[in-house]
Image (cartoon, rainbow, N blue to C red; front, side):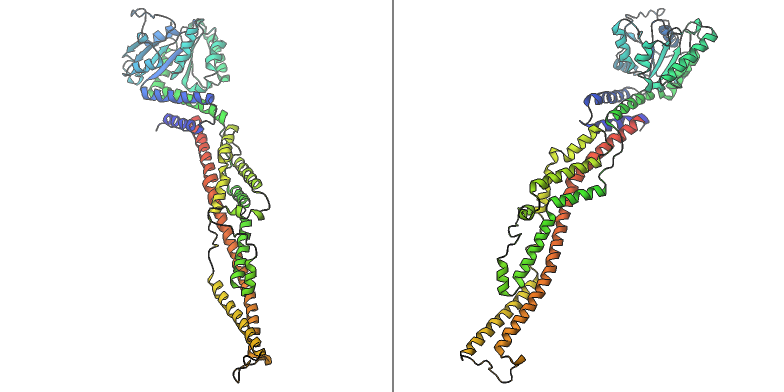
Length: 532
């Protein structure tokens, strides 16, 4: 890929990335330049379009005749009107299509096989020389023709009159606006035979200073005379070098692309941005975690699991009482937002939390886009945190509601401890029944000789005391163990919920912001390549 192709492709990438961010009136010239460059490359890369532009009386047409090696009057060619450009092309084939594209009428096209004054030098083949109407003509149509054809020139040869070389008409209207095209310009101080050598040198030096101030430093300034032939070999050699190296056609298009790229850069900015770095992203996720009520849900899960452990493992009578206590997650079920299920324990109302999350999203986006120009920043903030992105909060709620908190799981030790508690309960109940029956003489409190009598207590009292003591110890142990499990369940729930919010943030916020930042990078990189 040539340097020009690379620039054109880069400009196209920048234009596509801009979308509707940049003012269409700013982008339109860039699109026109891209289309123009594409068309020019498709039409011909074998021709170099050189235009002679100058004011009335600058000797431009005579210079054209000398360069073309033709006396138009002598060959019987009559130019129908001075408001049309005249073209002379030296092979290869294909110049006609190029001139038709430029807008030169077929009757104003001359084809030649000789190459300037050196027909034997094939390196000059491919020249398309145009003689434009006088740019300072009072005829408006002439100026329009000059403006039109100037868009297609690969090389400008500005023909100036020694008496009017500083004329503002050509400098203000053409030279200064085309300062970015200095590489595509040659300045000719024609009619040099009218000045002495001393005056000519003064005029050339003065003209070079003027051009330097206008951004044309290093542009060749050649003093010529169509009458005496002075300077014509140097002018031919300069044109020949441009044709041979193919620099002229490339340089003009490169200059066009560079110019519009820099204008786009001025309008849309190309400053690097911070992006959504890890600290900002983590802070955003933490805000979402708080706004989604994750800490409250985790606390509620811990409290609920502790309550369920008590109900499952406490001594039956105490466990029955525990069933009457409020379970903060008793209504938590499939399809119901966890945050709604614990709304009564949320310190702030859901509407306030939603507003807080929306504000955090906007602030994070603004931090990530710091350095962007206003149109780009506004576009990215709107895409990520604007009205169209308000569904982020709903997505967070759905992510939280879809997390399996493990509330349906019942640890095996609950069942084992519960069975032991029932055994102790039955032992206490059996001991009480035995003691009551013994008190009424219905049964013997000591049914067999040699039965253990701890502390002198009868067997019914041993059952009652042993059952109560073991039940209390087992209850205390199960409550401690249940608390440990509940805390772990709460921590697991918090971790799962945080991971769900993290994934949702990555999928919706980060991915969307990354897409917009990538788009901005395509804009920056495209303009950097096209405008360098």
